[in-house]
Image (cartoon, rainbow, N blue to C red; front, side, top):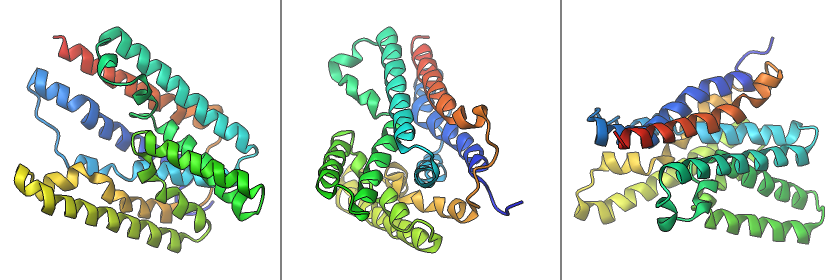
Length: 264
């Protein structure tokens, strides 16, 4: 038996933290405003920040081990579209006025990790083809299009450095972790810059700023990367599709619950 944690166990660890993060970001403020529940502490956004880079890391690993990259990408795109459709239906039912303020396309990005994973997977595929000198011009153009799409899609381009680091140093954990730490440090410096240039006039504390600009805490994924033993782990239909089912389901439940308590 391999020492460390396999991919399935890492997902089992990530899922409750993901749930906690979304309870905090989706439900807690509605409960605070309408039920007078205590507001959940801002540091929750920090301790849960390892989740999305961990899923990107496992996606990069899957990129090299999947039998069909096309099927993998299509599965991510399909999941993103299903989630988009489900969230749109929920908002149509509870709050049609939302669409007079925002675009339907926000649901393709907001709380839709499948869109992020699909874009990152496609981008890495382009980079890998360029590295292998396979249709270089086409893949360069596609990579530019994906980067531009990520910029338009709610600023997802900010997430691009993470899969690039993980792909560029694939198989070399120490270099991956150093790259992630440097990326995290840069985000931390940017958060400090925002605090010292803007927050003083608005009365925002450093603690609040670091909780709001919480992406600097992505370095917390490093222990999980080091613990990963490279094994897939338990392999059944349930384990394969657990994340694909749990992610949209818990988001939809939290959104519906938020709407219901707002109408109480």
